[in-house]
Image 1 (cartoon, rainbow, N blue to C red):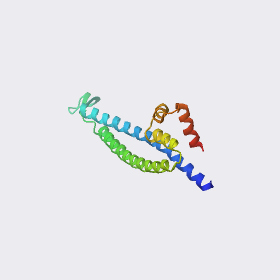
Image 2 (cartoon, rainbow, N blue to C red):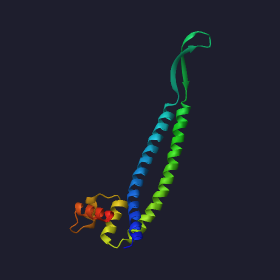
Image 3 (tube, one colour):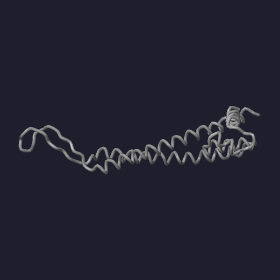
Length: 155
């Protein structure tokens, strides 16, 4: 096997790890979107906010002044954050599709059917080792499946 073939395999294998990380990143972005939506709903539900400050009233006397208003600055900040997160999510999902296409091509190029199944189940379907062993069947165990995957990746 030539040096460039080994290098190409390393790059292709690294994309498997990158894909797993990307899926976690997308989950995180979705959580941030939901949290921001909740903040926006909370602000909208609360409507106006009140505060009391000390100062000079219109009649010239000094004392407590009640201030009432909609928290427009915080609301706009959350709306802008939501727009940013939605754009980030769209870009990440587009990249995820591109990487998934590369992974499918790479998996299909692997000669060993067992390794193809292990990689597909683990990376694409996000299955646990125990589930993979059960799905493949035979004398495969959770540990044997995990070790086969690790040996393949380290090769």
